[in-house]
Length: 169
Image (cartoon, rainbow, N blue to C red):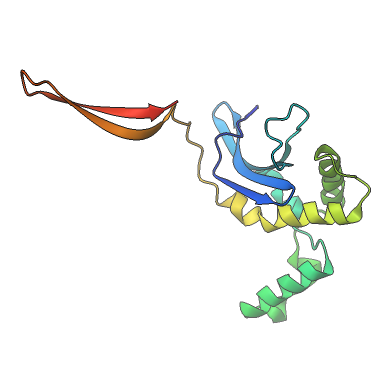
């Protein structure tokens, strides 16, 4: 499997954590994923990307705090669905796996894996960006260079013209 953090659909900097919406490249099966890394840590050799594949994103659909549950309840109220809002059935995640994963992510991001606030923050960041993850378009291979200009060359003798794209490498 391959992960290219230079080719991404979106990038969100949230303080000391950067979230990147990209793809896990595996031959013909290229799946969207969300990657968490320390802000400004992409080029650091000690950086280990924390990967949330789209297939496992449901795990993080849990209430990470009372504040988040209140926000979800208000959203349900705005949508006219408050009568149907039941925390026991509203969330589809897997609390044990979610907490275990964010604890590992905290360590990989070089935070304390024993700090409950850090774990909740990482979990909330992931949950808040699950919608972005599900809106990542299908993978397309990156161009070798982005077009930065067009050039028209005219042969003065014959009058023939030729169009050339100038690409950034």
